[in-house]
Length: 193
Image 1 (cartoon, rainbow, N blue to C red):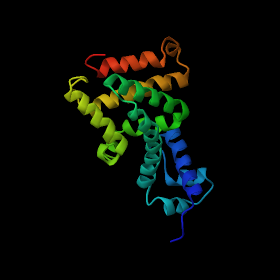
Image 2 (cartoon, one colour):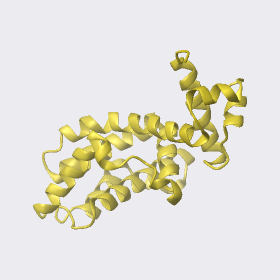
Image 3 (cartoon, rainbow, N blue to C red):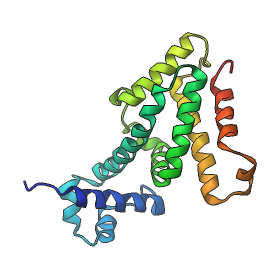
């Protein structure tokens, strides 16, 4: 088997990313990706065994970007409030610098049929640590006794909605800022601030 070119692999990921944003996951195909990169469909299959593997590769690429951003935020977590503030700040920064990644991750999370295919929490060190902190703070009576996965999902959804509204230029975003949104998340998650 000939060695794979990482530049071509990245072009395929980028083209598939753009197509998912434009047409949705169901509207993305290896034929369309090949056309987008001016290549042959067989070239896509030399990097990804199937459309499903390509779609999973797109998610994996964007998840690695977000976890690289979240990892340092967890180091600053000296309290539940600091954890919420630090994670929210990292996600706001990530959404600003990687708006496409946020949209891709949200698109995958919004598909019930795909959620079971996404990596489990224990398959990622950053998420394992994040959820471990959530559970520890719950045991200490500092975070609401709601499943940590749901609290994290709600946090992510609030940040995604706010950042997408800002990107779209929706009028109400002028009445909000990241501090206000982070406080909303803290109020949702924490038993006491």
